[in-house]
Length: 259
Image 1 (spheres, rainbow, N blue to C red):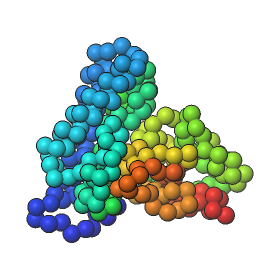
Image 2 (cartoon, helix red, strand yellow):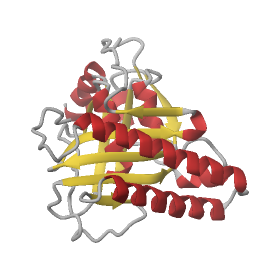
Image 3 (tube, rainbow, N blue to C red):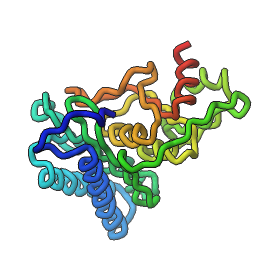
Image 4 (cartoon, one colour):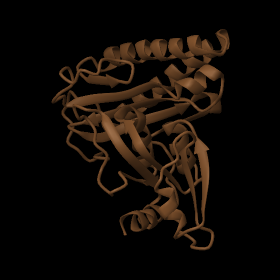
């Protein structure tokens, strides 16, 4: 993240933006918990969760940062209102909405800020799991070396496991942990329960912006599977693939995938 940027007298600091991302992710999560407890499982809960969380979060950003642009999964996908924006909030008001509708705990809220195309702050809330992390206060992850005999534990999409696992498993023993939401998978790495989060087959900026901000705040490396940075603030918010891991595991995985 580009935390060491110049800040004008009128512009919030990185710490202030990170604190706001945490506050809004937490508040949106509380709204979703209340809605979950007041409705039965099913598509109506899912659709209401998406809509009500979006409305709440976007209105809150308009109050707190009225000059900033916003990209939300549930908002307009027309790039014109955000094209060239100096400050762009990228939010997923309800990541994992189908799981939320069913009553599971693999869902969350993502709030991230991009300044001039660079990710600078973000927060991920997992309300049903009681977890909340932001890029400024998250604890650093120790960079332990990869043990070739123990191998790697990798979290992947439960419904779309990446084909790249085959290449990785040809070099290391690999144990996979299938989960259903990007924020959930990212915090598994941040909390040290797995070595890496590997995804291919496509995502969008709202899926990975806040998770990437929290991961980078913890000292993890976040790239595409070819080692290039994730794109943020593009007209097309599609993001093809993702790798989040502590530096030694990230290097080991890319050595296999790019070798």
